[in-house]
Image (cartoon, rainbow, N blue to C red; front, side):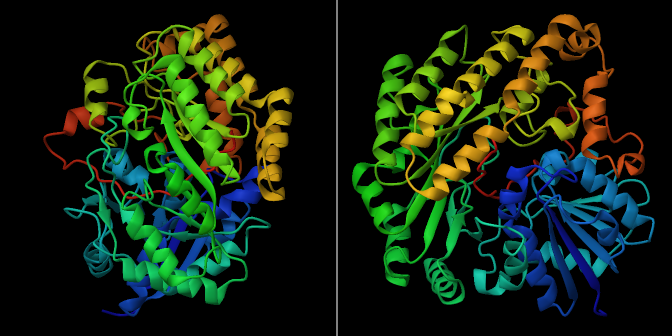
Length: 522
């Protein structure tokens, strides 16, 4: 096989952006799998050009890259940008391949715009695509391995792709590392709910750590494990064997059940400066928070005390909540969250809206059977800009009013000052201050609540009575894609939200790979 010109584009943004938070953090959202694909392609003798798109790069220069085949990795919120780039490259007779979470969650839709759509991806799938390289005249080919890779290229092998990406980050520069895939917990809404937990080789982890210390001055690394530290002693033992205490600063997403008092001290001793634990709900999924026997106000106090314990040793803590779960009802869940924020003012809360991502989890089949999933355009499916699941116990307008209210409580001037005063260290104080001041969450959710009370088109769309996209949402898409709006493929704004249900007997279930811990803007 002749040497191919392989272009790999990792989309860390939905489109061009000038937001301060995006400039600071987007380069740190680079994924590991696109870099692994680059290593595998080079090992086969191909010429690889890798680019992490942060929203600041020139689109025209990207499309003008010389390529025989283009791999694009995208989360669902970046699907429209991915579809547009694919259309531009295909006009030049370039074969296009989509990977990442959107490919796994919405393969039926993605196959309309790409020649190949990849679920679980190993070296073998990449080899086959590079060898075959067939243009899909109508529908692209869906491919998926039976399981996740048993190993991935290490940091040293991926460094030629990591280094130029880190150079785009002005201040915080997170080196992407991974030690496991899958998750031992079975939260029904999660993309890793049915993916077996699988640790990687700890000798490889040690080699990665030693390379990072040799290559970077005062390095900071982000663990991309879906749930870091499940085999806690093995992980920390590897870190302690490989590098001196505190030689690398770490950020990781984990569960509170891992964060016992001795573990917290050991993490801090070994350079962990940021943790992103999932709280999710005050009524359910307590197995991740060491609060399995309590609910409501008692759980709030227990979790707040636990978070404050973490903050005494680790300066940055982001607590992750999911709003709108079926176990929530009335004012109480939101009042409990506000109470938690008052009791643990140093933690930055990230609020995700209950969202169905196509094939991402087993629960989505039940939601589609019940007719509860709405066809919101992909750009809004980022767990922040649209809840595409009809709430079980709220009217739409009431839910958005509650969401705006709790966001206001978290991002008000009073809360921002209390958080600033409670935080330690310039980096944590500055990052959380920028996040709080730059967030548009309160204004956005308040506006949606207002539309749901005053605009009939919006009301009918949310209630599932009409498929007509409200003007507000269409203009939002146009604004984000503004230089590419006219190049968006016909029909891309619409997708079948029940495609998983309709094709469950015809297409293997989509698979998941790990994603970076997301330090969300709000």
